[in-house]
Image (tube, rainbow, N blue to C red):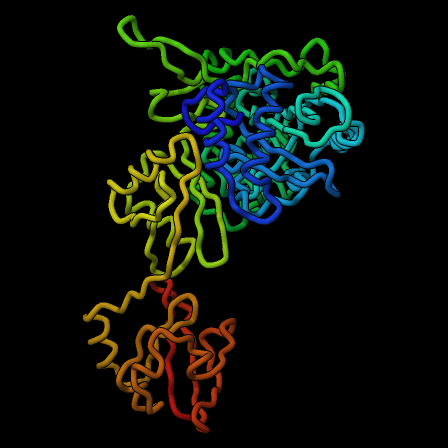
Length: 492
């Protein structure tokens, strides 16, 4: 769980450095020296965790509300919450409307009494995607002790949504489980409206018409509705294959919903009932294994779909790459295909920023390197193998093409073009003469700051503005082209 690369916890120096490389450097986070000490204490108390590669949090139970003080990259990948946003917070933000309150109370009891806990619960990613999480929480005591006052908790999470599917009954699915199926079936646009409307598995299987779907997801297209109806029909005809995954690979994880020593269907185990000596079969782990007779023994992960040296994703997490996007003061975690091209990535990022951008990625040395072609996209993914790819965006000025400028300059009416942030990127000669301004007076500045305030919610209707003690009429076009907006200006 502490790992980022193909390193064993037995090599304490290298694995400690891997721990520190995942620090976010934000207030409330554990300091590197203390993290190294805590690393050794975890190995002392729970040596079976040495080679585990899963999502992990550390919380400080000596502080009010037991806040998170450390989070690894795999937690970001599983939940889409950036570390910078969750450090210093209690991890209850993963809970949602259908999270079992009894399970939540059991977690609270374990924290209050310093007990071990293992349970399966329903959690939600930041983007609203529900998932089933097997949650193991273990107390950490003072250095060189395995009892007494609990100082920290370590929590290991595993998204086992896929592993639970064999034998599940779509007729009995809850709205959250319907949402999971829609997301994993490539129908994520339907996920939130279906969950908001409380659509159960029984109701899903009864869908027969476009009108019924429109009544639930009114913004969905006919094409998407057709795909949904096709997949619902396939689900009804073959419920055993609700998820398109290889059952033999699922069986390798040996996951059972109801282990013999669990108290209930949530596989709740508390205190002494929690196994603190053995790894879980559904965890990814790193063990020495020979790829062939002529190769030396190397550490490779269990449960990997493809070449173990090309990625560390398993059947539960899929083949998506996690990317953390820094833009201005915002941090967004997104999932992208591992085969994404530069142009596809730029389209994805542009849909987030709504303005032309320059992009840099963080390399292994922590330096920001320009991302400008397919090769640099591949390099960004490779240098963060198994971890989160960090990219930093900055706004790039993109003038209108010469052809568009010539066309608009020939138009006998005042025209200004603003980007999605309201910054002026073009004003034709008629508008310049009308307002008596030069390009240096307005270019790349917000219309509201250099000309006048506008109500951007009023489109295709005239608004009156005052500039230089004169009154003008401005109309904001409802048509947006490449995230740019056209404004027409006339004298009153």
